[in-house]
Image (cartoon, rainbow, N blue to C red; front, side, top):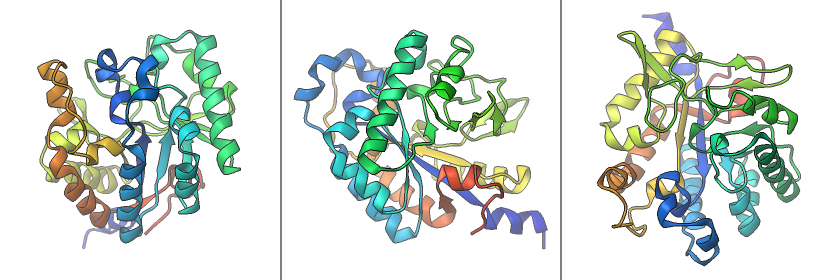
Length: 289
């Protein structure tokens, strides 16, 4: 029996949910200006409650990177997440890309979100994830701001090539970016001289389930590292309104296979062991199932 395979099966991976609603997605921003958000019916609470039930049934824990805007309007939801044993982390306040803000505005945004989440839960918020993985070569100052705001880790870099984000030459695994901050990149596999995404999001919906499962196993067995998987509540919601005015490319990316995601997600929960970002990556030793 291959001992590396046994080690891979015992690894706990990090499950992460970016808590935002369908109308806050960057690609749909032209159709949902922030001035109209308060008048747009939210679906996030019901979607997150369904996710919590699925995770509870599978015995899975995870990290919920939550918008301050959502937390202000649904504080009881944030408390339910925390009371279920999951980590509350920050996704910023208003889902503005870090690369579209000045350093001063960005720092204010992430400080505000941290304060809101900590006030609601009474717990320290240690992690931050930038909307659309918008920390990269164009804004190297962002990590300094994240550290200054009091976060311990960031999960804001995706080391892939993509038309909206990505730092393809960034390290694939955890690396320091300051005196007291580490960056924990989204999971990729290395093949044919480049990194390939296997960490969730639209790729999980677009490609067959087996591709994601294979990639996670490759990282666990080959790299002997825990993987990170990320998703959004709206990805389990095929009943959400369809924005017909969006471009064909945007509609495809946002709506592809929504009706299949919950079943795939349930399978993922049961095929691997899942934990919180802070416990998987910051506890000193990689936890085992």
